[in-house]
Image 1 (cartoon, rainbow, N blue to C red):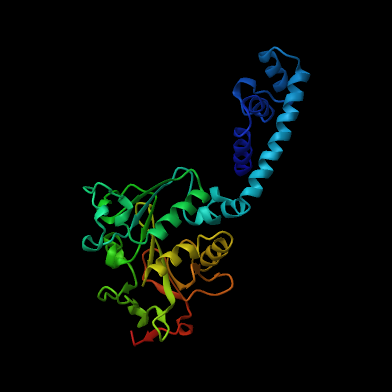
Image 2: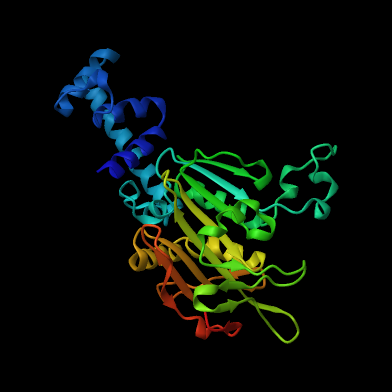
Length: 337
């Protein structure tokens, strides 16, 4: 019911001032003309306007016809919106999965390029200073901001580099990019059942899961063309109520894949539902493949293809494997844990 009221109020707000006044009275949205019956409300408005009640009824009918067109136009323009946000007030749907409740504070802390790798205009003292020039994983940052805005226009989203971020008063914290270039990600490593094995710049940083004796990295062709990276998405719930999402990968492709896997329209909702079916509200680590086909990012639909690896824990217990399909991935090395 609250969703229906919100949709109607949103459509009424798009009407002209005259039509909006008549529609608000019809739907009993104005305290000044609040009465039990539609006839009484319309007569109240007629007295205020100094016209006949039948005039108000005629204008109200026109306003309702316009409202129908407005609501239909909204539905056609955003065919996935109702699906993605369904029941968001009760915590389901994509908005619910990502904790995008009305008024939620969402902070995104994006990895930053090391000082010696940055362009000159990344420095505030440069005459052509561009703040975002110091951000790494910029594709993922833009994607997250765009999708969050599409899912819920009522959340407050801010972005930071790790060197700028000192706030702890947030509802949702998204940490974009792995430990090498994101100091905020490194702060969470003691809580995690995995780490990325550090290698010199220009080499892969493979994913290591010590409890499973597992080392897994990007998959390359013999000509050193990238076939697949690992998309690693982690959800943690802190004691203060903050939900933390960590977006990682061995390469930038994996970081973007971690965002797209559970955020794409339709497919993201199906995949999020599958993860929720497996882990409920528990903390989890999701690992799946990410591929680049030309300029396209290809991530699996988890309703059709099971995750490569899914770990979960409840109440700060150790993470355990819920799904382990790493045998299907070619760049996997196992040793005794």
